[in-house]
Length: 286
Image 1 (cartoon, rainbow, N blue to C red):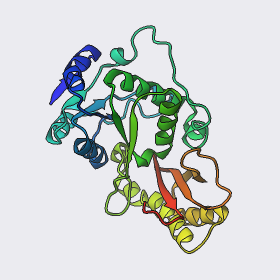
Image 2: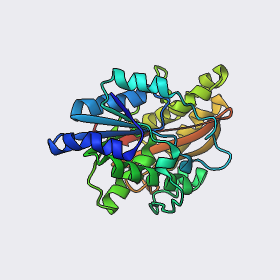
Image 3: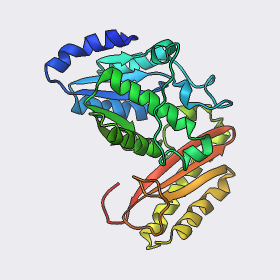
């Protein structure tokens, strides 16, 4: 595995593989690898000739007062895990490579960035995400990029950006990886104290309750929402939002029909967690 930090070095390493017609995959990450990241890498390794993993904690997607300074970082550990998975290139650029002096451009996707996480964290959060992802696509030039379903809104936003800007990259979404009790894997799980870790399963319990309600025939978004929120109550977490929306537009649903994304965000102690599930009322598997 090559550990690269500059765009010229990255492009030079990929150029012969590109000329050979090999399929290049990109897994964009902020590091602190867990099994969710490794699942993305595994899927990329299965389907691509060359796999690039980017490792960059992007300050542009953190608001003032969020956990940028505390965000877990361990490049040596991450590099070892990536090498074990057969990754070809770990691209870990310094801040000045991604945002050089005088950087003045923002890529913003309207509409999809305003609800859910946009309302909770401000639309600037997604402006930071789309700007850095667009830059990574231009730096790497991948044929396909891999994202996790846990960040369902991010997946929808990136798809829209790629479509609107005619970026020649396929977006593949990999299912959420969970702990045995259902907690979605996240780098921020490292913040959870033992008591909070026990309560963190509240988010998955809420999503399960929504799925059970729909499986029993409930088609009212309000009733499904209430069932999910009710499942949170015993865990004493601070709910930020729980919404039933269309996966592609993130518009609230009038009825639980077709594909519905149930998205939830809550604070468990000081830690903010998100999760979601896709419900398919037409019977297609999740």
